[in-house]
Length: 298
Ligand code: GUN
Image (cartoon, rainbow, N blue to C red):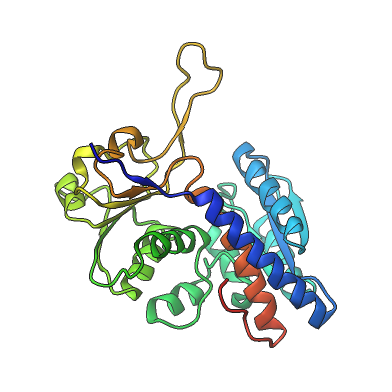
């Protein structure tokens, strides 16, 4: 039986991070300052703490300044927005990332709206979402940007391909669909109300799964040779002898190997690309703010 190519997101992300680090070095040589990324973490959600720690480490390794702001879960929306406004006005800060989710008493939309779109390296501000939709230069959310880079690397020209994106979130599904449309794919966005989802997915040359349900997409849903990008990170309940359950994606990976043409593993697929793209976006923000041309190939 044929077996899919395993898309090595970790290796591709390492190469992207090297290119970003080289871009940072030349930015520093020209401007005599390091690009800076401010990360704001509210509360003590364990997963968010791990993500923020990884972002900080990668930022510093790329030669950029990391400014971390940790606020208690009890902080008011006004105080959080006041911090964002301070960061907007700080010249040492090129990019601002407010880690989501935020506590329930804070309106994410109001906080994201307060970020200067020129520093919105997450690409969540409606100005950036709108620019992406109309085909203007925009900051693109890091996860879908990383998925697109992997697809272009492994598929090449995406023009005319049938792409199915499963999930319609503002962070992944919708921007992913916009990016694929801009590459001339025929795009379907499927979601929890989609009828006959397996049949819809079976028509896809490219499948991007971003639903957050462990191993939902099974091998029989896949057209032979389909390229599968798995955005899901789900922890299974621990089995006998395990202290923690295994991490799996939204796709039943082992079975899909026999049907797919190429597939990203979990972990080691999309995850490493998200952080590498954040560094990339921050370097782009620094160049634009300094009035410099953005380096090619990042
Ligand atoms: N929470 C989970 N993913 C992300 C992300 O990409 N950016 C932010 N700000 N928060 C997140």
